[in-house]
Length: 278
Image (cartoon, rainbow, N blue to C red; front, side):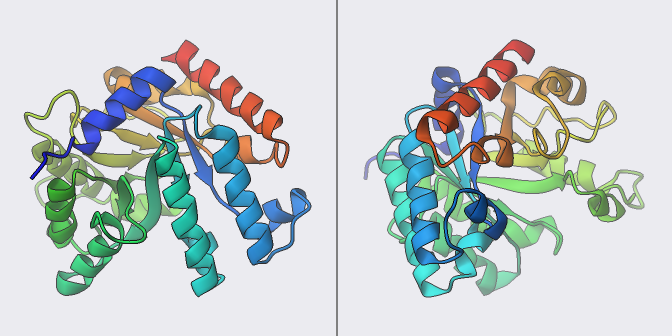
């Protein structure tokens, strides 16, 4: 059996070669309308194909948001399957933003949906929610290791509501968010050049120096662009861990479609800003 290169190593190579930018594929109704497309399967397919064709040779990671495809039922899932396959065939890593989380056999089924290499929706990495307890993610962790895929665990998210759970303090005095980061550091111990188990940490959160972000793994940073954060904010938010940050931009790039050259120019501008900042 041929050894699979772990996601963390593949991501490090992609970031070093193309820069760390992650572009979302978020075909919500308002954006489809802005592109002059219908809120239907034809619009969904045109949108997704345009983004992949315009940017697949330029960005390190695509992050399709599964919900925007799932809302169309089986036909939407078929478009998502093609989008993932086309992006990966073009050499871009795919991070499926599905935020799955459950226990036991259900978590295992979620993992098999996105992390089993022969699955129609197999992706290079998957976002997961640990708020049924970090241990509930074990089936996904084990399958990710086996398949060479990665996980991004919700730790310190950019939405204001997240603080009531993630900043809550345990009996040992450590916050829930800090606990998740510590678990990820354990998963990534000894991995080189970078572990495959990342955290989602919002770029809008300001000073995070009280948290140990050095998990030897990637830090997905949503919030740049439409949510108000800028590339220049990254060093202050992430400190010494900034080299492992994967900044996510969705609307900031996508609003420039459907013109492919405009999409490319927007992504290039964000990438240049990020390189200058970090």
